[in-house]
Length: 259
Image (cartoon, rainbow, N blue to C red; front, side):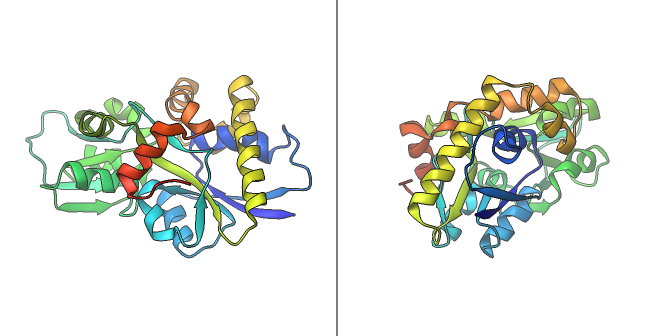
C-alpha cells in the first residue's frame, strides 16, 4: 500500500522521517510518496485534503479536524523552541509592519495572541523574512526553522522570544507543528503509521549520522552546526509521544483535546 506524505524540507522533519522513507526500518507493505513544501503550503494543502499524511501547523488543527486525525508522534513541541520576533539592530521600536511565515502558521497565531497591538502583518516565505527585515522592507519579522539560529549574521536583534513568552503565560511547552493522517483511513492503519513514525524518530536519535546526507539535501542552511542545533531543539521526547503536558499544551493553543 502506498500513502502520500507531505512534509517540510526543514531538518527536524527530514531527520524524523529519514528511517521511515529511506528503508532504515521495516515498514512491511507500506510505501510513502513524499512531497516537500513550505509550512504555509502544507497548511493550505491540508485544508484541501490533498495528502494521506501531512505536516501542519498546530494553529490550523481546528479547521481540518473533520478531515484529519492528530498522530501522537512527530510533533515539534517543547520549551525554548518558539518563533522569534526580530528587528534591525538600532532601529526605533515599537514596530509597525511585521513579516510572518504565512497567515495559517502557529507563528502567526502566537504573534497575534501575544502582541495584539501589531496589525500590519505581511506573509512571506519563511526563508525570506530575515532578509526583508535587514533591507528595511518591513520593520520586524517572525523567524522559524533555521532562521532563528542565524539572524544575528544579518544585523538583526531579538525583540521577543515568543516561545518563552508563551511559557511564562501558560506554564506549558509550545506546540508548533504536528503530523496528521486522514480520518478516512482505518484506525488500525493510523496506529500503525504512528508507531512506524515513532520508531523512525527513535532510530534517527540513536543513529544521528545516518540521516545527515538526506537532511542536508533538503536544508536551506547547510552549516552542520546549525542543522544539529535545529534538530536538537525541535526533535525531543514530545516528538516520540505528546504525553500529558503535550496534550494540555495542544488543548491550550487549539481548544482541542487530543485523543
